[in-house]
Amino acid sequence: MKIVNNTQVDNPNQWIESFVEEVLDNAKIDCEQILIEKIEEEKHIFLDVDGQKYDIRLWAFLPIAADLNGMVCRENVQYMLYRKKNEFDKGYTEQVDDDFIRIERGNRAAYEVPQEKTLF
View 1 (cartoon, rainbow, N blue to C red):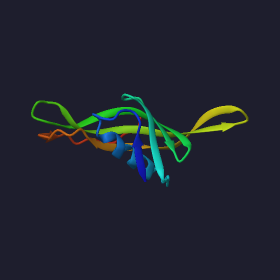
View 2 (spheres, helix red, strand yellow):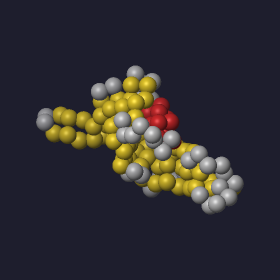
View 3 (cartoon, rainbow, N blue to C red):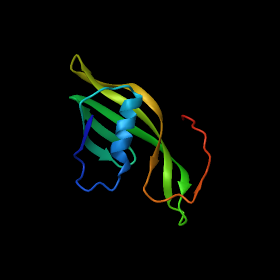
């Protein structure tokens, strides 16, 4: 699986590519290439997966660890994955998967808070 991020050359959100890969793995979507077309910060990630359009909707960022300066370094991200469909000249989306995925922001954790995963 090859991931191409067309959103920016120097991506400050290093977690996005691994997050997208894990979302598609959780949904059991097997593919050759993933193109990240657009990112609406902390809202949507728009994808082209082997020609099929997908939308990852980011619902919540739940902090679970912070560094000594209080900056969040680990979060559980609640998401829903949708596949875009077209039938009879009408576009719609169908839900494929929803879950939580832990992301790492890059800074080192000084402490971690236990957290239950609860879908809203």
